[in-house]
Length: 454
Image 1 (cartoon, rainbow, N blue to C red):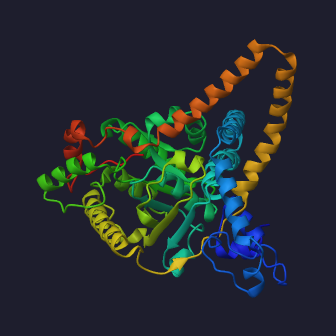
Image 2 (image 1 turned 30 degrees about the vertical axis):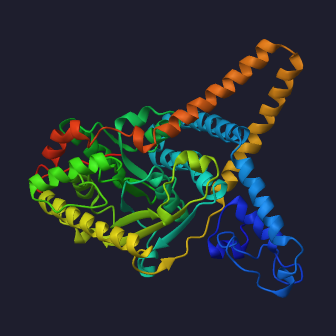
């Protein structure tokens, strides 16, 4: 179990543990890990003994610098990528082995795949929480927070950052629904190794962004979730693509032509996917969690930065809205979603002005399972890798050694390619000028409302 003082503060990250160990007060009867890692870099010494620790702060700074240097090394990245790739392929293989079970005991197969899926996705969460030490502060009504993780919900996320999906996964992880979480994703992602293949077995809803072709398959996929045996959150990026200035300009041109209010910090929501999700999950899903994400100090987080151990500070504002408050008809649902995004825009305005979202904060303690899962796979896979390296070097064959190095580099390039798919500048053209016609067709407030993907 995680130390109670750390769990109470909700801090994560290897750097926090290092500094907490160094700056702890040896004369105090308090436990050794006394400082919360999320606060350790900013808290002044609490006693004369701590203030008199010879070189304590200097040692902490040196250790933190050394740790940060270590995190930026290619060898560490190679180890992380190796563990992720090999463990992911093993999990994908195990998921294939569950296929016969689907005919015999469908619900058991689903539960097993939730655990297997968690084994992959939690490694990404561990990278964010424990490797980079990124902090996530939740702004929410404490009464609403009591429902989180205990009910099925639709989570509406803004789509402004390269790692917003990862922050959404962290939100799921903190409330124990990461393994069963769902998304409405573009069909191309189904072919991405590890994650895409994992999603197939988790019954993720895929679409081609051609609504005439998508409607039937999306409805069928959503109906399949009505008897899902685990609590799940259905994550939606209603803007359909990540925010860029170019896409925002096109989107606001469409808003003006349709007589819709303009947004400053979001693209126009594409409501078809949202409406069809609400209609088909009504009675199964209890609420919509309106989630608005931003980062402090105008940080621009990237997945590559996370891999390099860079620490970010995320703020997430979540409102729980009962599903009964959302109109069931498509026109009413579309109008409701437009108003929701106008409110989200106001929340972002307040954040840029004050550095805070409205309402109180709710502590989100780190759960240790993501870290323990990664340590399990690392201990299982690194030992045979070390033996293989020793044998390869022992052969003395330059051909074998160079082939091994080439394989490692290829694996690293493969992971870098997957990371590249999250980069904003490499995002889809969905919403750019060449897609304006489709956007206009989907941006009405009635039957021609917006589709939602990703």
